[in-house]
Image (tube, rainbow, N blue to C red; front, top):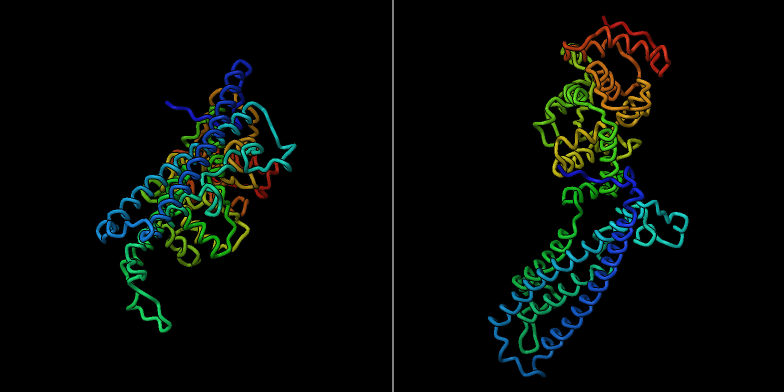
Length: 442
């Protein structure tokens, strides 16, 4: 079994510091040398492209016009296009290696206790020299940065070569006169140019996707901008921090299988069968807003959110925004989470980071607040009664105790000791944990 290392929870011991320092030096040197290689290859590409364009644009001077038949130009254009795809893949892979080694440097510095935050004004946070968060160093830095120069150069070169395929006797096969007639457009040329540019830019960008990055995530970012919804865009770091929450539970040997069962039963009964969105629950939630239907069917008021949607607003979408706009974004982010994470990971991250009422975030904090468990010595198994109460707390928006609500939820769990549940609630109330009334379940 492979164990992932999470640096904020892991520190390198003295006996391993020499090895870590050597690894730090190697990673730093590798990142620096790869950056130089990238720069050198980019310069070579610029030089090679200049030579090719000079020859193509001066065919009469070099006396090679008779070699450039339509077929030869088409084959040459196709060859250059394929070479461009291969070169872009190489540049993207090299950029990823540079970034991975830079992140490794930042991670090792953190694990060794080296912190440059005191000089953060002179060392930018997104540069390896001053970074304290490895995820500030990104695979893709933008289309107008030096790292993206190969895609612009290759698109330009192959585009000009393709254009020359439709150029003869000093004139293009098509022209745009003042009246602009679409019949003058050579659609083969235009479609070819569009495909060249789109395929190059998309290929390069996709090859620089991060671990959990995909097109659906970028569409979610677009939706957030369109509706002006705040959205935590450093998604890799947000997911990383969320993973820390359940890694911490595992380190403290907290066993929460019972909590998983109660959460799925109460919060999202079809959790393992849907892909982030449950249309049946959504429709039922809309109907539950009607008091007559709610009382007739003995429904509890609900928002129809799946566990993925709740997780989306917990770690990515601030809640102090328009409810309906936020809900739209939650749907797309939930679909994305369902694509990039397993159901088990989603559930563990949810338990480790979700709000358990009273502003208590995560299971570990909830156990400390409600049950006064300060230290976890050895294995701690969460009983079903405790699991039920914690689930009722996280699904309780008002932070109060509603006897009817508790009784309704308990019908789903005949195996739970109702006397114990009642006793625990009244202990909470006696301790004045913001639960304002006495509760009588049995």
